[in-house]
Amino acid sequence: MSQFLATALVLHVVLGLIALGAIHLTFMQVIRKQPPWGIVVAAAWTALLGFLLSWMTGAYYYVVHYGVAVKPRIVSGEFPWAHKIFMEAKEHVFLLIPFLAVVALFSVYALREVENPALKSAASALIATALVLGVLVAAAGVIISGGVR
Image 1 (cartoon, rainbow, N blue to C red):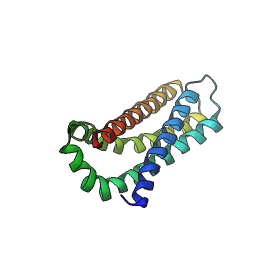
Image 2 (tube, helix red, strand yellow):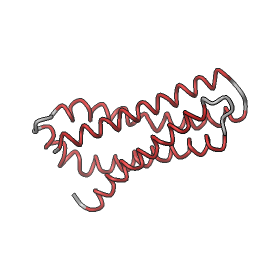
Image 3 (spheres, helix red, strand yellow):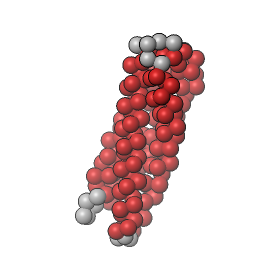
């Protein structure tokens, strides 16, 4: 693997973890009785940018290296299910997360302008969904990387 691909992979992981921390912070602040909207907006933007950049670096690594060099090793190794189950699921769920982050950001801006309990509940559920899916995608990444060893 080239240094550039290794860097893309590390950035994919680090940016994803930053995004997870930011979406968690967004969730924890939105559910407060009086959310600090400046922090909430900054966290939602950080989550969105982190997810998008992780998406792009991960996609580059996947297209250029994973499909050619890593996937065949996993599928022919001891743990083919690491790709067949977890990577296939990760590929599809991972596509959804940045879109959830966009809607979360718009929801945060709307909540900042008007107090609406129904919107707050819906936004909290959406943000929690993005968080849970992000954690599951990260866990799938750990399982997949273990399958290549």
